[in-house]
Image (cartoon, protein in one colour):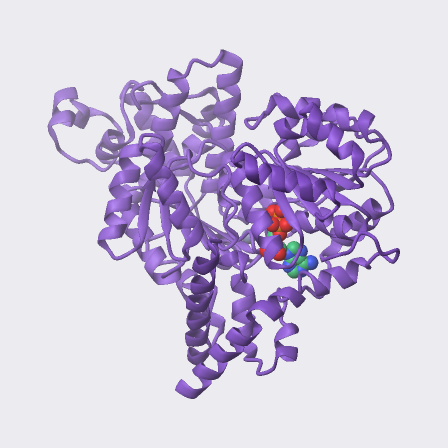
Length: 611
Ligand code: ADP
Ligand code: ZN
């Protein structure tokens, strides 16, 4: 595509339009690109889906020589390279999954200066012969993707990343950029130190993922049915991920969804490798597959058009929640993060924590993280504000795109009820779980109550005015606020923090539990993506999706590598009739226009005839 021998280098904006088919840079992109083209070093921390790739792809095309991209995830490399090739960029990979002939071909191309971009696994880059080879060619820049892998404290630590500082010595003067979506300040410093990015300019984006709508509800009992309604009502025929805590639950939920006509597939560490790979592949290559998974599913998932991530259980922490929900909407289009959880999740997670082999300090930390998550789930105010403030962005405004903003929950004064709930724990000896306590409060008669003589407690029957669900909400929120702790067998115990409330020194405003019909605006809100289109537009969108699938199958690439959903939607909306008009649609660069333009126009005119 670009010729490395011409003296005139293409402008970033010309590359953005001509190659990628986009009209404008997103705010930090242009500054990063200019800085790298000028030969600078940079650290880029921007959330998933914000467009980090262009930040090194465009400088690689604009500078003389080949851009070298270090990436730890082979599956991601292949997708990126397929997408670039579709845009007419000369890109290739070097990693252990290639056969010797393919490796040789790539090395020959590289040596001949015939590549714009090379994606390479770190262990491959560090081999002496690779470094030698690179020493003999023009290197446009080094991009180190997933740079948080240098951190020994993180979950994704890769020892080879620690040796990447060799680039500073072997290639002084070649621009280097480290990129990641997740790095707190300590990790940022670690990246700069370990990669010896001395003097690098930092570009730190907001953590916010404005296109993701957060919807969190309590009520573990009918969670499965609520999930089914959510998927069929708001995301029919769309790709999504459902997270569950256990393998058994994964199997059950996948079977239940499949039984209701949803293309749902299970994924967990107990399945054999071939099945897992097959399910992941279908998810990646088709547009309507819902993966039901344990947290084993995620690393290396780069599908841009995941329209929802659902949690049927509480995740372990806000970090985990943010990372898992972050897999939705990487293409920047509307997506939803949906959760239903119950008190039982808190009990199970608490037990897992207690039984883990971690040291006391670690356990305390993990417990705090779980409490922070529970507080997020139980709060009545904007969820996004809490998420952002958790990650250090303290002064954001209410977002207007979460359940609590769209539909502010009613708050009631639960001070008296909370006192009764605590007192019931105290009077029954701090040995009982929530269900029993609620039976006592509501004055039920059953074997357990008889057995312990709890009909004689002073708290027996004092709470008959509230429904069981309301009591459950009171208990959940007392736990979320640390006024009650959960013991080894699920029994509730008072903590020191409950004293001010018992003494009447503080009040406790609580949200009303949401009956499942309450969140009407949740249903009325447009369900992305097809809802903005007219009926005819939606039909064309579907026809274009079918065409895309056909084109993708013929080339053995995932569909989104051909066109993003947003591009198809814009086509369905505008219905261009000429190649010129088609080229104005975002996401259609010169090469795609040439390769697919006529087929797309044919589909549009066919739709017009049928209408
Ligand atoms: P990240 O690596 O930060 O997760 P990507 O580089 O994969 O994000 O980009 C996410 C999506 O945004 C991709 O579909 C990409 O094509 C699109 N994108 C990136 N930059 C722009 C832009 N300037 N205009 C329109 N779309 C863009
Ligand atoms: Zn909000």
